[in-house]
Image 1 (tube, helix red, strand yellow):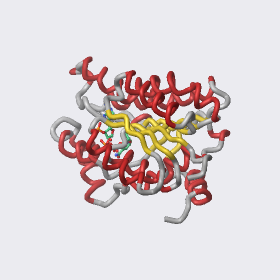
Image 2 (spheres, helix red, strand yellow):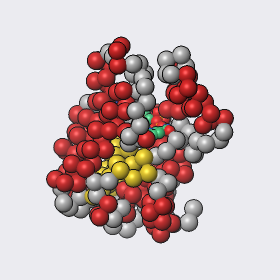
Image 3 (tube, helix red, strand yellow):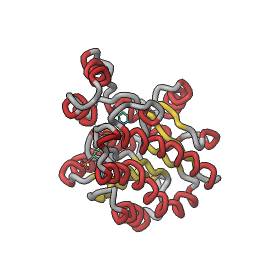
Image 4 (cartoon, protein in one colour):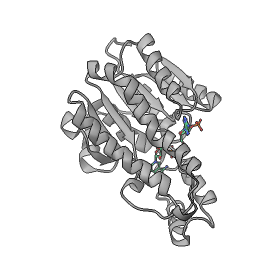
Amino acid sequence: MPQTSPVVLLTGASRGLGAAAAREAARRGAHLVLNARRAGLLENVAAACRAEGVIVHTVPGDIGEEATAQRMVAVAAEAFGRIDALIHNAGVLPPIAPLARANLQAWEANWRVNFFAAVALLRHGLPLLRVSRGRVVLVSSGAAIHAYPTWGAYCSAKAALNHLAAVLAAEEPDITALAFRPGIVDTDMQADIRTQGAGVMPPDLHAKFLAYRREGRLQPPAVVARPLITLALHAPHTWSGRFVAYYDEEVQQLVAKTTPEA
Ligand SMILES: NC(=O)c1ccc[n+]([C@@H]2O[C@H](COP(=O)([O-])OP(=O)(O)OC[C@H]3O[C@@H](n4cnc5c(N)ncnc54)[C@H](OP(=O)(O)O)[C@@H]3O)[C@@H](O)[C@H]2O)c1
């Protein structure tokens, strides 16, 4: 493996979009530090990545705890001495409930994973990201800009994540910071919306998510992983601070220009 292999930190890598993103990054020769809570699933993903010839370290644990973020950075520092890209992909939807019945502990748990984990990763990772003039991609959602009733915690945390990317761009001129909209992806999160959202979400909103699946509109994780990893490795600095979608034409052009043949 050439010494110039980029080093990528990725949260939520045990399944869904994060697992596909880990494999895509490995296919492109990136060394990895991977996190998720389920150590067994995470190890399976790591093994698949190592088969591409890259070095992979796993940091199992709750990314809602600052110590987990700190450990990811420490592992990267010790193993590679650098971080080229940081992708905060771990995310959780619950609580699904109207504001009038908000459970503050459940909101805090949601924000710890969706939002505060990103703050902790930046707090500890910025010194190395500055040295490499690295990239940060915060995986956001259409819910950041669309107000879905009963999704208050998720919508507001993702909106905050978008603004965090903008603040990061304003504070750190050497870093390229983006919030990323993955569209609708065929993962456990979508399955959870279909099951756990029934009878809780407004019926028309829940029906919309059932229809996405019925009409075959969910993207395979591997399809969305390509633009995600493209942005983490190649996003132009002039885009820093923006919220970009996987299907944006300029993103797809960058994918076409930088992705090796499968
Ligand atoms: N699927 C979609 O349609 C969609 C749409 C818009 C945005 N997104 C966003 O895309 C990202 C990935 O979503 P997905 O659909 O792949 O979700 P998913 O299938 O539910 O997977 C979520 C990932 O996050 C990890 N995770 C959850 N809580 C964690 C915690 N406390 N600490 C560490 N890891 C944790 C999970 O692993 P463990 O359970 O092993 O911890 C898993 O690897 C999320 O940020 C989500 O909000 C998804």
